[in-house]
Length: 301
Image (cartoon, rainbow, N blue to C red):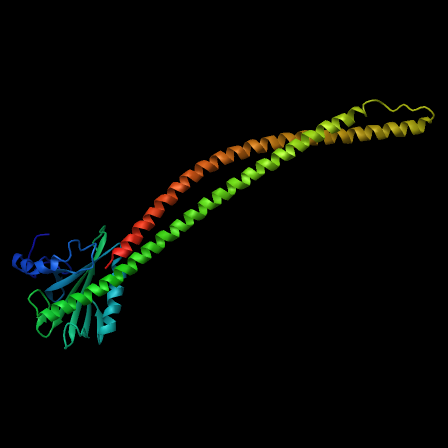
């Protein structure tokens, strides 16, 4: 944006100061090499509804306009007799003892252009000697700057903590998902062991039953019994034979089913291990996000 000091720009537009004004701000700007990383307010000017006034600007990363506005409204309420919020926030009869023994009128406009990463609070202070700027008495400029800086730190830490909390919840959820995959893998391994044991038992049962079945292959022929008893014995043999065949069939099906179950579980374990690798990568990436946000929070000052 081209520099201008006129008040003819559209309302709500930040206006950089002229060259001479910027020169006067150099001592303050040197303390904030990166205004987005540090909490030292930047000195600029802004087109309020009442005109262009010098401002102390505070920027907030990944914050909505409403979040920033709500914070500064509450801050104004704590030090002002009255706070209005029409075209901008105005704190009437505000008191900042470190800046002035008299009351101060504070103007705050918050903006966040569409698609922007940072929301900016433009803050102007009107004292009995005029709007606070680089040429203001040292007490006024220092007191107002410190007031903005202290609250900027508070809000930035709140925003950073909220961002860290969200990232931590994501990490915890991913970790739970990874733990679940590990438990599923363990259950599958246990399932393979049990299926193998059942399959082996079914195979042993089949062999034993087949041996017993051979003993029922021949019709019953016993001397010394009448035909009725002979018929009953044959009937019993056939009944036992049918039962034995049925049990052999069940044993065979069980053995085959367990073999199929082992194959399915082995495939599931292979897929699970691939999923674990992918999920572990997600956990590692999210852990780095959390680490970065923790570092970001520590560096806010």
